[in-house]
Image 1 (tube, one colour):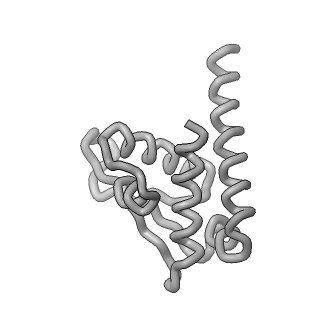
Image 2 (image 1 turned 135 degrees about the vertical axis):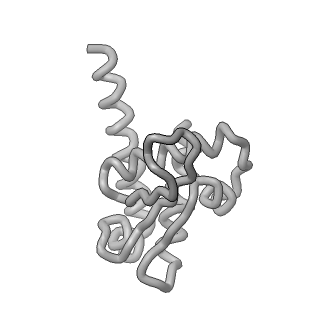
Length: 117
């Protein structure tokens, strides 16, 4: 799982660091393709889970085109120039990848310790 998360995070940071506008909008499936991974449904869900964790932590914002109560919805993930991820990716992409991976690891460990307690 670590390698998978790493490729997703690297692709996201690469996308932001090379962007020329003021905002990046991406869907989980598009990020998978950009990372060079296959787009099986299970992988799309894994990518959405990674992006969801980043959204809960404030690194990306979620924009839905349907109400949250429906199960079938396509989420767009947005990174704007005022967000921390944007600044990290533009200033030092390698450091941004390391920070995000460490943060994901911390969030995963936190979830595991909560279920064990």
